[in-house]
Image 1 (cartoon, rainbow, N blue to C red):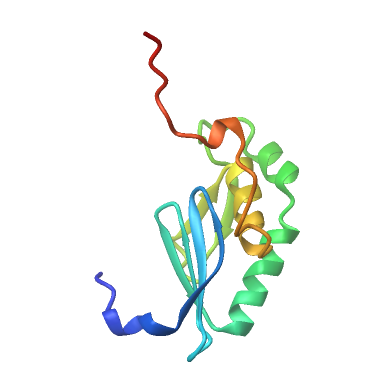
Image 2 (cartoon, rainbow, N blue to C red):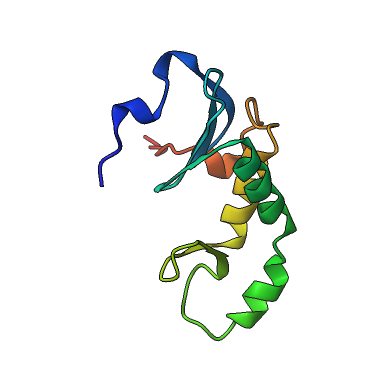
Length: 123
């Protein structure tokens, strides 16, 4: 499925927050939130965004990691969708990063060593 260019009001988009693997934007004209995280793109109105944000901050990561402890899946924290055959799966670290993105405090985060993607060549 291709996204229609009219799905975003390009001249009115403001970056709300940014992390290594994603960005959150809002359109000041239509008040639609656009969330890009890894290879996921979600679009919300204000109420949907607040509900999603509440859901993400209320996830019991320990519960889900314990539930899927015997699983070979790398990501063990599910986020269900309205489409019954579609569940988004996240790792603990991805959930923490998503929470940071949604907290609106990530426009100027401090970089950690692991966040620097650079190949060091010693001569």
